[in-house]
Image 1 (cartoon, rainbow, N blue to C red):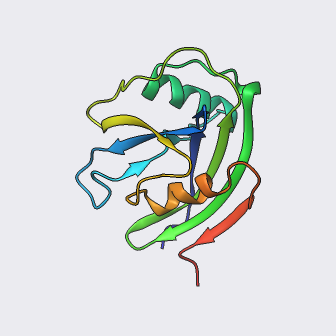
Image 2: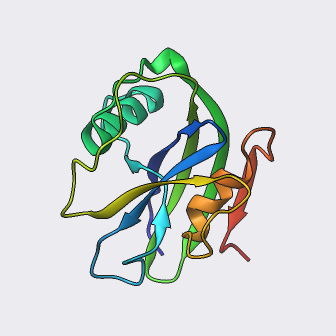
Length: 144
């Protein structure tokens, strides 16, 4: 097991009762599965600044870090994957229309009604989605 933990930031965008998801493009078991816009926290960066940066890099939208509301923290470990903390933030407001700015990492973006989400959501992402809008605020996955 790794002696470190990665920190991921995830952005929950809800508009008119619909959630924005991206279909992952990768060479692992997550290819073709839906997840939230997300990325890694970089050294010297606050969690909200990282979430705003990732949203801009992946979607082309601008979010003021003050417009991010913490929804959920997930402590996750999985077979073959490093342990991680996932911080999930709802963007209360943003500027711009989301577009797929990373077609090498994402097949497509799509808005889904909150009551009709696809079945093929990555479980890690679903932990944060399930927390919208009122919790639970913490979960653990893969630990004994």
